[in-house]
Image (cartoon, rainbow, N blue to C red):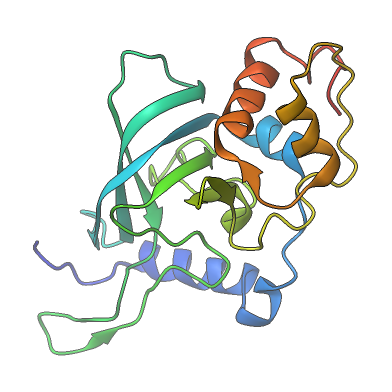
Length: 209
């Protein structure tokens, strides 16, 4: 992939992200529970990460590109889509540019990290108007990886169900257990809970808050 000299826009973007999410702040990200993640996402998908690559846009903005083979979608796209590809701000690793300089524009601390082969649920903001880049809602809080039949985010789901209230009479036992016990979430029940919350408009109708 051709390397581009970072543009002024790219440098400004990097400085802005680093100012907003420093390593010290990464452990103190504003906590978002499940209701907030659903509300603030434009797209919610599940599937297997098939490709992770990085590069520069034509304007010199560094990105990490993630492709997910979809197994399901709860919000934003329909079932006709088989893959979803998006670009997140920042490179995977430092690069030496054509002029010999070392470029360190990595995805800032606190951003979601992606690995080929992992099975995930991703809560995604819409693409930025000027750059087209996307990030997960709540940054690393909005990306869940499958481990031993359970979905967990980078913070082991801490705070994910804090304050969440669901007034729906026909929750399954598995869905009820997720909401009441917290921690790693049963894979099938978690995605179905999210699908129901979106399709049945629980948040809009005040049944989930």
